Length: 158
Image (cartoon, rainbow, N blue to C red; front, side):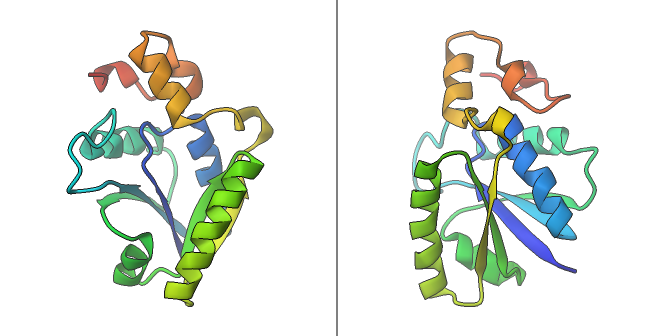
């Protein structure tokens, strides 16, 4: 079974993330959405990692072969622990590509068996970022436009 890890903070999981995940599922038999966080850092984002997992599970309940987990530390260590040789990274802009390319090269140097696959977000989602969605939430706006269908963010909103 060809499996990939789709890592990120997913704070929160957006329509752009969902779009990249759907595309990844066309390439892989199984995709593990891995919610990364820094276990030693206080205040790990807008939503706690466990809440992010629940949001992603809610968003992906109609997709087959998606698993969700949390992790801290290097993504390549998670890959090695799970025996996965592919990392999925979504790209929205050329700036994303530049940053992700550097990270991919560093990962390749440390773990040559692990490959990074870049998947561009569909054009209609290229402007959506978790930062924008958090800002909308913080200021009381309607974030549902930027979240996968079926996600009721209000039940998780702090």
